[in-house]
Length: 351
Image 1 (cartoon, one colour):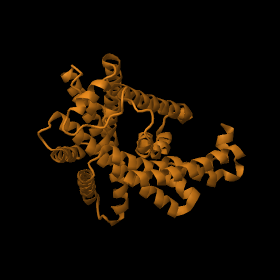
Image 2 (image 1 turned 60 degrees about the vertical axis):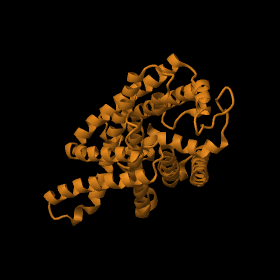
Image 3 (image 1 turned 120 degrees about the vertical axis):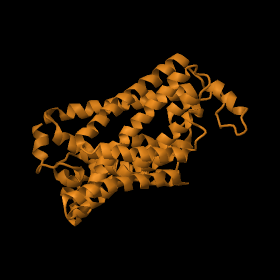
Image 4 (image 1 turned 90 degrees about the vertical axis):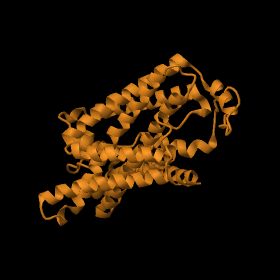
């Protein structure tokens, strides 16, 4: 602990502040731009996810109309949830619903077992059969899927930008390292559990959202349960939308605040900002209605920069002269690896 405290120069409360300390004002502006773009892109991802799930429940309505309806509901929610305290309630809802989804997927995999052979045979008799690997219907290695896969994994571990804020808001900051370690272990366990359960059940036919595969599988004789699971997923994503939009709208508000004459106009402007963000995210979601594609791009472009390249680069810049050789090697490995994977993965995904 003494070694760590000796490295600290002055209290830093955000990622942009770290960037400003390490790379100056231009570095802070660049990182802030990437962070805000990441938050905005996540809004479009959430709309696509809700549209996909609603279409499985109400297939007679187009996905675009579903996303428009959800956007209208989100506009109403932005009027009701204005403060960080009210937003925190949404965080609790999102946490509980996500735990319920993970447990449901895992228990369904244990109960139903391997459904891939049945679904693969069923797909072969459709007008446009889905590509499946030969028996046992679980491909060991798919090179073409690596770029999107890497982006999706990176997207799952996004959110590093809020870590300094969490530390500064903790009542007992001395427990920060334990808290952050446990949090990421839980995220890893949830991701591996869902990924393993989904691939075990559906193999190469699995959807980019496991809950959609569960809902559409005729072999699962629990229609009511699967509909409930789908609604849980919609609720979870709905709550995350508001959570991600709050800091983004607040950041835009801080930019225009000097131009606003009084608090009343500022409050109206804040509401209009959120409405504009929703409409803009809806436009992106309608133009690119692919959940896996959007997640992969956000992960490869934004998350890799914010969560992999920047922390290592800032660590080298601020403490490089005091670091042992092995720490410098790890930092450079993260920087070079992040740049290569980000560029190559983005190009491959766009192609």
